[in-house]
Every structure is written in C-alpha cells, then in structure tokens.
Image 1 (cartoon, helix red, strand yellow):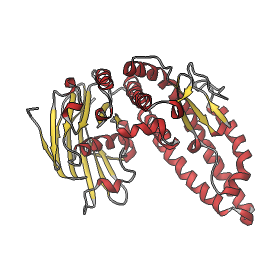
Image 2 (image 1 turned 90 degrees about the vertical axis):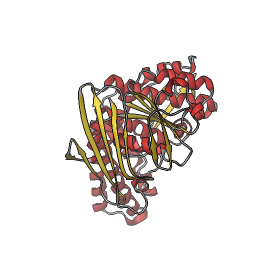
Image 3 (image 1 turned 120 degrees about the vertical axis):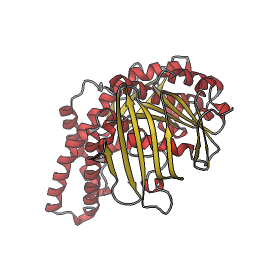
Image 4 (image 1 turned 60 degrees about the horizontal axis):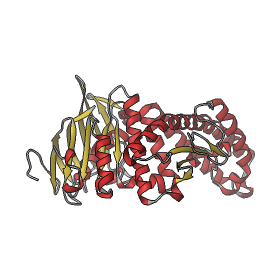
Length: 393
C-alpha cells in the first residue's frame, strides 16, 4: 500500500496543498516551522484519527477556519481508493471512503501507517498512558472494530467515575449501588475483551521485537515485554526469555472468560477503596506494558541510547506485524525528524531496516542527517509551500 496523492485544505499552515507521491522513500526537507511535519501528520491522521503532536483536533484546523479537509488516494497492487476526512474545529468530524459517508473510526479499515517520532522515547521512559495508546492503536489497525470497544469502555469509565465521585463518604444509597452494579457489568464485558486482545497482541508482537532490535543494534540484549494487569492484581506475562517478578500467566493461554473471572473478583475487592477515593482503580485503563532488556526493566535501567533503540525496535516490530497480518500489504512508514536523534551507526541500521517497505515518508531539517540511500526523492518545504521535482542537494 502507498499514498499516491495528498490534498489539504486549511490544515495547519496549509491553505491548500496538492502533492503526488509514489512508492519508495520520500524525504521532506525544510527548516523547523515550515510545514514538513504537517504533511506527514495529515497522512498519519487518516490511519489513527489522531495526531502524534497534539491531543485536540482543534489545533489541526488553520487559524480562523471552521474545519480542515484531508484527501488521500491510495494504491495497492491494481486497486486504488479515495479517503477523505473533514476535521471540525468543534463538533463531529465527517469521513468518506470512495465518495460514500462512513463513520470516522472506520477509516482504519482501509489505511495503515506506522509513525516514528522523537516522542516515541516516552514509550520506554514515559508514563503508562503512552504505552497503552501504542498497544491500542496497533489493536485498532489489526481489528478496527476494537476502536468501538475501546471508545465504549472509555465512556463507561467516565460514567462510572462520575458515579463513584457522587458516592464518596456517607452519600451512597441503594439506588446508587444498583447503578454501580450496572456499570460494573458493562465495564467487565468491555474491559475483559480489551485485556485479552492486548495480551494476544503482545504475544504476536514479541518475535518481531526481538528481530527488529537485533537489526537496529546488532546485539542480543534479550528485548521482551510483559503486561501488568490490574485486574489480576499482579503481572500477566508475555515474557519470552526474561524473568518478571510475579509473572505467571502466558498471554496466549488465558481466555477472556478467565480474565473476566479475575477482573470480577478484583473489582469486588477494590470497591470499598474506589468508593472512598471516587475513582476506578481496576481495569485496562490502569494497566501497563513493561519493557525488558537483559532481564531488567528498561524504563529504569536502560541508557539513553538503549531506550532509543528499544523505542525504534518497537515501532519497527509494529510495522512488521502489520505487514504480516494485513491484506493491504505494507503500512506506510512515517519517520518524523527521527534521524537527527540518532548517531551514524543507528542511522545506517535504521535505513537498512526500513529499506524494503513499499513507501517511506521522512522529514528532516538537515538533509545530511538522512542516509544517502533514502534521498532519491526530495521534496523541499518552505512557509507552507511545496517544491517537488529535481532539486540540487
């Protein structure tokens, strides 16, 4: 799969833009603030319905406008497809596939991309939320219907937390308890499915992680991962060779029914504390992925270089997993200002690792930061204008 055309209207600093692309590597070069990242951000948005830079869609709409439009044409083998989305500065977005209206979240059924960015370092060193978002985004890429499950769970969680806050202290009543029971059932149904899918995803991702890390580093540091599942009261393991404290449940062996049974027991045990604190303390929203190198947790023991290598290996593993499972071929790889963060050895290894993907889109402020083999198609960006064609280096 690759993008053949991108059109923007009032997206970020682009009043309008029209860009034709083909297979292979494309390098977007320009000084900071000129708009090169905005182009790849628009492409990534159609795969994830979100930005890797901001949490609100409002920032994507050009100042003073009510909405932005992103249109994209895709090609896979002999087939082509048109996707477009209207991003509202406030209110609901609108999406179309082949000219037909669809729900925005359905766009993930048709297009997959994997984005590498400096922010990826937070996957290893940051808070659990970044790791949960990484896993859930990959889940939706594989099975778009899970986007609805995750969205429904988040709505239930908000309602349940609101009820718990109103029940703090002596204010709870039998009616409130009965309502909490109803929200618990819905939370168990949706949350058990999310936990099960995350564990299975880790199981599928693990072999790709080991291979990707080896390619990027050239050494075997036994990279692996586990899931810390609050519904179990300890860690559920998808550990490979590493040993995790308290980890005894293999991700591929636990069923959704078993997860729900444990979740139910833990939810009952934690209810007094939840009512006291006014917040939900058990569920997939409290879980975390733990990354390991040489049997030690990477978050607290890995050096800066090791953390970067692990983060890049995770993203490369995700791309390899999508490639192996998707009927639409390779995902589009997006590398947003990544090479500037790497030394010469890692730059070379990363370039070699991504070289056989159908389409790779790269942004850089300095041309020389990018290995020469990825500079065959250069697109210069200046103040929201695009310069294509043959450009002298």
